[in-house]
Length: 470
Image (cartoon, rainbow, N blue to C red; front, side, top):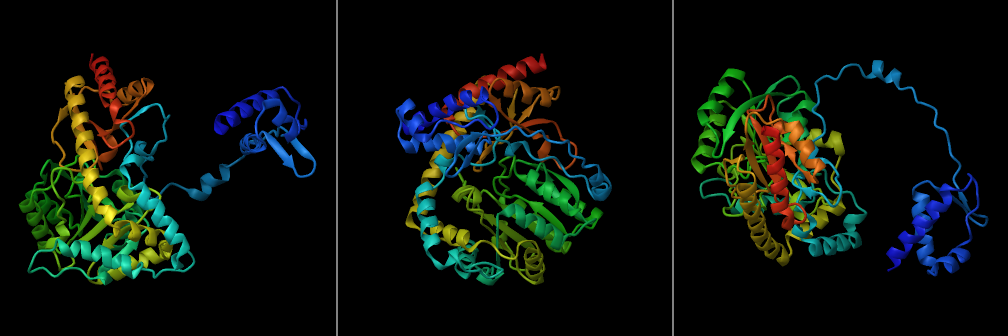
């Protein structure tokens, strides 16, 4: 009720301000309380909202006044053109998946799960406990909190088969999210002007990180079971690349999961060519009908640099990930991390560790699996009914996305605009290709808000696509 009253008072005062002269004094708080029959707290909330919008100025002991209108002088930033010069490498534009859109729209574009899929109670409790502990005031080691390093090492070690040496906590580097780690890893292991293999399509953030660091990407086509090992071997041989960025489990955007023997063949290729595999296990917690087994569990000679993120599964506000790196490569990556961020917030590390070590974490993951399957199946059914022109080449066994091939004649920019005009936000597939797109694709995320709207969203996409192709 107070929120409704506050909004009502804010709207009334905004209308009053529109007709007042700059510098005009607003009625006193006591007068506003009497006029609107609201509490002083509610009136203060309304005034704070107007002040935040720059419409009023408060002068303690004097009163509240309509803000003076300031005429801004046009700024001249021309000098920056010469100072910046041309960029060393063309950077892709920011991803459409990061856009903020109206709350009443149907979201298929975002790369993050809706808050109802997050362990909200665990996160809030963990942050409160971390704020009361030493982590809130102390600086953690550059490589991360030892207890959190141990947790990441143990998780990977439990999946490591007999005959392979499991990682140690000292092999772990804690990161402020996996995106930040990709830039450091590419810079440390590849370097500007040097080639790196990448699946095509692949994660747009990796493409951006490579462009930012000046790494030359060499696309390798990939499918529902992963890239062809022969293509990978040939690309290593022809380019001399010493790294390959991969997503063997629930790839973003396709949702593909590599077959075990295919992963082993690609690991063998990396060994033959003395190369690194940068394994991005971004969706480790999002298995639906299968379990993710990292390729890193079959390597103990330092060929696989393993990245494991908690950001999407714990909370977007708790940006914590880890890189498991063996050998001298660890020190080189750690040196780049120190130059970039020195250390990762101890408060967030403590909170992340608290969440994943609570008994409720495993309960949450079991529930999450069921919820994701229900959402995925609903969206698949809706697409098959309402978008028959779309081809789903792979029913993902995990992850957050469907990857749909559309008719080659599809005008993707127009389709995205038409859907948005009708209240449905989708992501064109072009930004997931490191070079030219191999066709017309869209990525639909099934972990966004309001899954009950999926059928309606699919219907709108289908109608827009029918007009597009007509």
